[in-house]
Image (cartoon, rainbow, N blue to C red; front, top):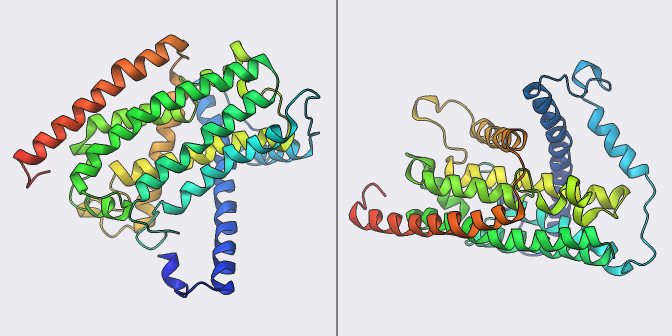
Length: 336
């Protein structure tokens, strides 16, 4: 653990080291976001029989996203005259800050984690919900009807899909008896939970896509209906913070999926010589690819279809999965 390298008593040195590590990790995440966007464009191009970015950084377009980021940072920051200025300014911060805070409890390997707390899973769910407040605030403060509708859609969608998402995690908690993410990974040393909880895995992936506001659940920012939804009035670096929040949450969701269902850094029995970090990176990359594949493949749902699917399909199945898991754990304690 990173915290094991630090002195136990609070001190200025302790705080400085944690701050430097957090800044370093932020740059790592920014690097992921930069090239996750590039990878998404490349995969989209491949699946749609196009080339994709190929102008900057050689034939692979490795510098295209870097150029896009520089362009955003140099663009003029505009605030509508009739907007609620304080709320308009703070909304992107409320949306982004939780996305970075949740990364603290995610164990990337058995030795790489910022905070090993007993209720890491609960912390993740609680903190990630704050982003909804930032999105609703952005929609309200913009004084724009499209932004307001996008903010209302985001609130309804995130609240609706947060419930089946959390319910899908209950089965994992039942199997491990803990909310500690390290203990959840340890419980999968012999058998990954995607085998024991396939229904929970599917529910979690679907709800995760909805929480990320990605296709087919991108109703809050549907370009064909709401121009850009809740951040239609934002520009420059404030707009970039909303996009950054989405891709940081993709990093977090892919990491959490790996930890909860794919055994974290645990290896297959006959491939134990591969380092733990490599195992985690491979599983993580597979989940990210899955999220990109879903976006490219599926069309956008209507609002009524989205809400009905969450409440009438996902939630009942998640509740049934909890009941079945509890029964099987009681009948077959050696397996579950």
